[in-house]
Length: 462
Ligand SMILES: Nc1ncnc2c1ncn2[C@@H]1O[C@H](COP(=O)(O)OP(=O)(O)OP(=O)(O)O)[C@@H](O)[C@H]1O
Ligand SMILES: [Mg+2]
Image (tube, rainbow, N blue to C red; front, side, top):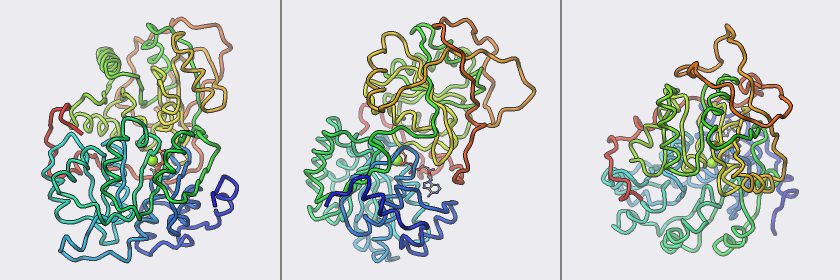
């Protein structure tokens, strides 16, 4: 049987985590985290995972997919939880693969939070850092392993990890994990796993080619779709400003000033563009971090941490930061350049408007990007509001809602060229918050990694 939208919705019967049949230790951890009710994807996926089914589960960004797979897996492993010191008593039973290192760290942090009252062991392995500390963890034995594919294969190649007892495989951001870039590594990993296992695919986007491909290594999978396929986060206001390529940076600063945006993630398509824009913004006095795949891992983590802690106002990023990252209360995402792949638009803008919060996504679109905009509109199956750049309001004596690392410089231009379109109301993203789920701010990632990360050159990173 295949579960489509309607039948899966009928499964949404449990209204509390306790009714989903989770162990008291897990319920206590959820209570500590302020999770009071399960989200729709959690209500739907948890019973199916507990029932042992393979899943292709799709739900919008920021709606709690991590817990939707992690909680039932922990529940299924409760029977194996033990405090023995023997590594043999802690074989890898659950393997979670993610496309980026930062996401692997984050998913592992969630596992640690959910698992804190159970003696199940977990660790995370990812490239770009020294292998020694990871080897020590693996040697001690872990039931739950979160990994990026390249580094996992390195550890498997040097016999540091045994995957022959894996019962559960999760591909987070599954459509990305199944694309051409990751497929060769994924195939190698699948060859190391038992064929008899439960496999779970989660993402906010799936396309038809992936659906076909995935079925080749899933067994009688169920499909769970919480929203219509490829829907962008509902609470994100999406705006397009038409701007000439050369005017984009001025337009960016102008929007930030006019809307009093305290923090924003700014996406470019290429690493070169990210570096160039980041440096120009820094020269203009805007506290800006830069994150992309050519940076050393320590720099990547420091940039993300600095942003999460509010030390910088802007983080200029490539699509390395588009998927999965959960930056609490991020008010705004800019598409400084539209992505080549339309699905990346959905993931990029999903960094804001998470866990019931509202958000704002602003795309600065040059004439050269018209065809990318057409593809995005088609993919998300809705129109995007086009608006002229906002006017900068006279200063008000009110402090911004969120602590600002530093003010946007006063020399923000007001004369960026734009088509003559009716001026819409400028909304304050922070002012429109819905009732929402409580979320604690996290410790900096760097501080959590013990021993401290030793850099390796980016070209040796996996
Ligand atoms: N039931 C819940 N109650 C309160 N907060 C929750 C609940 N479930 C998840 N959250 C919080 O919601 C945020 C988003 O969760 P998560 O990162 O799992 O979303 P996601 O669906 O995986 O998004 P993405 O598609 O971007 O990866 C996290 O901060 C998480 O702690
Ligand atoms: Mg996620």
